[in-house]
Image (cartoon, rainbow, N blue to C red; front, side):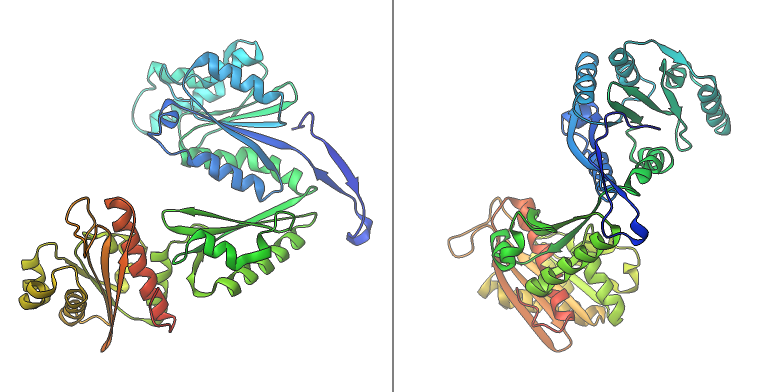
Length: 442
């Protein structure tokens, strides 16, 4: 399929055999349709996925637009986007209900009627037949498309996609269900993008994740690597306490883009050291569980203020059962005494949120579970319970590694959810550092 309006220029230097390359300046817009997205009830993960996939093929996304289920607004957004970009990818609004208006909006933007596609209707009928059900009348609308457009098959659901041309833009419409969207990307859209990428610029990205230092401290360590005129371009972002370094490498050859991406990654990791725990979507708990598996060491946890959050995080990792033995949620002092053997005298003298109590908790968890390692947390997550000496956000973390016990004191800022989240991540990072041969302190 042609992409009208795409700008390009030829170059011929530096390639084997004098082959020319086309440096594509094609730009893409992504429109995400749905009231639930506009209202924040559902997170738009489709735009992030598509932008990343396009970037890896050297194609830039000019903008994302989230649009409500409002027909005039949808028509206007489609028409405006066609004036600015060469490709539009629209996700969502292809269902069978009255608020699924994307096909109607596209038809109005194109100033054409909707027509029935018999092949698509047959595919929908077959899908319901495999379920042992007749096709509901309302699902027939999913087989309609604007005159002059083509249908894209959907082997994961009942909503076919649509591809059309309007003005300078090629428009792809795909379901909003992420699994169906990704499948249609793979089968119908990505092959077209790959043809362009094979003769265009190559843009590779990587996200390097850290925990334990603030964003400004990380940026200061990176220094001139963050200069905006560099290629690869390097910048920092922070979310939920995780400081991520984003690397964008853009070159005329895939090999060059990958080489410079890897070199920049190596420089960043050398500068930041062991606070780097993973790349892209890797979490602290995944990194920790992988280390436990590699070293064939087992772990037990004892939690008070985090209420089982560490256990939940760790057991979300596939294969964690081989190294995570289990743990305790000892919210009440009586549970700390009965289940972990914390001396009642220690609680009476020092309080439940204290170095003495977290030390007893982690030793009790290790001894009673028979694990190689143990983590314990006690603290004041709020909103109540703080004092002048122990304000809300006060947390003690304990690690047990054989006969060694490490304790650390923190005061986390934020609401109850933030305090619990930071405490759990801190404990995981401390143990991860310990497994790497460090002292385990942040």
